[in-house]
Length: 144
Image 1 (cartoon, rainbow, N blue to C red):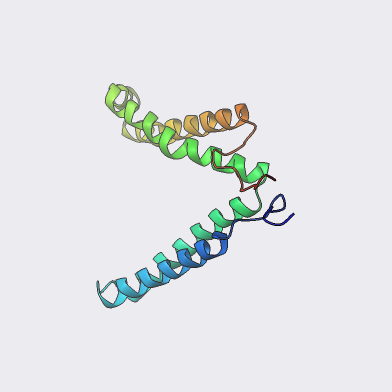
Image 2 (image 1 turned 30 degrees about the vertical axis):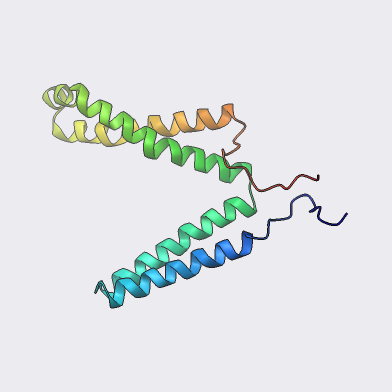
């Protein structure tokens, strides 16, 4: 059984990868403050936001769950799909038509809600079709 990893164990580079990511984030903050002269408040906020994103990424890799995967699918639907729908809306001329008939405020509300809500439903639909499994599956080392 030597050389065979148990199911669910991680490869040798797993821990150094996350340590390197954290150290790189800290180094970026130091470089930004001292060399690029970014204000300390802004750099602290950016580093904290980066740590939050790293924590979410780590959590989804270590403890995958259907709820977290569904949230990621919906977020995927809102960001690129919803933005793409918004671009189509903006290019189609429907905005001008709505502004003419409804006024600028309702047209603005439609422009910034409907495409993103539709994108969220599309993302959820795509996730449901794939049983909310993310394309990057958790690391599982198969027995040889």
